[in-house]
Length: 171
Image 1 (cartoon, rainbow, N blue to C red):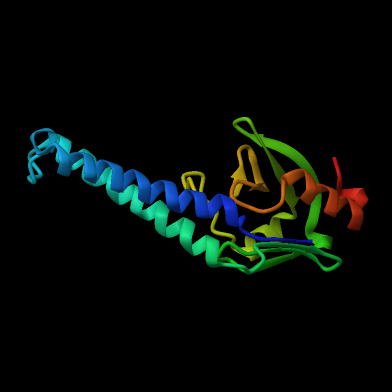
Image 2 (cartoon, rainbow, N blue to C red):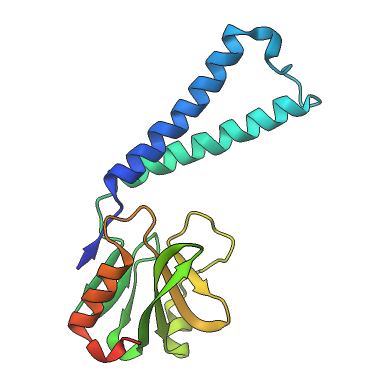
């Protein structure tokens, strides 16, 4: 199984982000009396500038993920390969368990990886990265959580693919 970035999700992200900047800009151009002054001492200018930068970042991210057709997760007979800029493979002998978990309300795939393999893979996980599909699992030092936000395959389908290859790993 190959999991890629979802084209519809990421195109929508880019279009909506650009649209928000365009709407805010056109509002201020049509009603200049409501526009903030172009000065960093004006808190409204700082707020709108920060929001515009954030929206342009998400537009760039959505467009680049829309164009990226490389698999981000590959589940095959050799193991699991993680993309997302990491391009690391974990062999099945190093995967200890797999199950469904949750991030807020959304289901997510959780994988327990042997501590030595987890360290050797150097996946550079961060609890604070809001747009990364790979995260650590709290309280489990060598476990990995795969969010399906923005991907073309649901986490439950990824678990089913693991079950088809290695049914003994499912918890």
